[in-house]
Length: 352
Image (cartoon, rainbow, N blue to C red):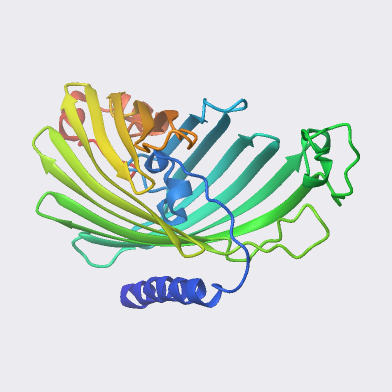
């Protein structure tokens, strides 16, 4: 039964790869949300990571402020929560569920997204060294613009773009809704105090139409490949990682190293990343009791051309992970009725 179940999961990942190739057609592209701390929002990185925490429940929030050199800086806010639940009669297997809320402001364009995600992951062997994960996410997007704040080419009066001049451009609507279907797969392997992970995800698989005009303006699927190794060295964990974004044939590659050092109940995090759009991203953060964490990163553009708008951006994220104490109220009450001799023979039991 286990072998059959594992074959189903592997087949789903292969099907995901086939869907990625099949849906890559002549539709238009859309710029993907560029988050340097995307690993802090794993449900956005890959839906297969939904509920993938060592703890039962986790939640996080992220804020990004970008392009302060322009009159209206871009900003992004993201919040998510997910949890996992063990499957009956399936040892070392879990079902993950989660929700995502995102808001972006880009000049006159406002984008809001609400998503639901689920994942299924299980061990491929009795030793629990190898795991395979599959996941899906369904997002509902709303994009809205204020027509009065837009300036079109036919509003040029010979000297300036005049907002008071009548434009013949006709928006069929100032607000659109569309669905976004995402799939993901992840393979992880643990060997000699090191965990290796490689995953792939694809979004916009349903090629949604995002036109504000009465036109067929479908989006192309977007793909993402990520890989990392979690190397444990005593009280220190070193995590080299690489993430490859593909949007309409153009790639954005981000590579870097994060380090986590445990100091009693506290943890210090720091890292450095480089992105192929010529930006350097240092990161620093701290954690408490392996549950609370805070991260701060800054994208610094390495562009030397002064004519280009600086892409510098600041990102802040906070997260919390919850794991209930072992045991429950009923078992505790029963133990109080036992004799001292019986209590000495009891062993603590975990709910997981």
